Image (cartoon, rainbow, N blue to C red):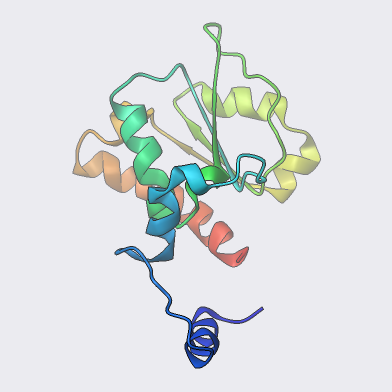
Length: 153
């Protein structure tokens, strides 16, 4: 497969104009969530407690941009009222948001999934975006996920 610069060179040699949204390709895919395939395999599974409208919605929009992943490749799974998760699909990376979610996620993943995936834990979405110290802690948790997802491309 051609690198991005080579692909653009080949397309320009053929006389095809390449247009991108401002912010690069990752921003283009995240901005057009309708274009993302619904059946695409998830690269990142985010498990959280019941979503509140404020912090979780904001993190849903910011997370794909921060990690450079298409919006359709991030799947959010919410726990029920008792903290139990539905069946968790296989993915290369998992993010558990909240104090109880790492344990719930671990109970739903096989040992093979746990050993082969990159798993990170962070505070609840509302707490993670509260102040600069919380955002720094969230970014520290996201770094291994970003490296893993970057290496998959």
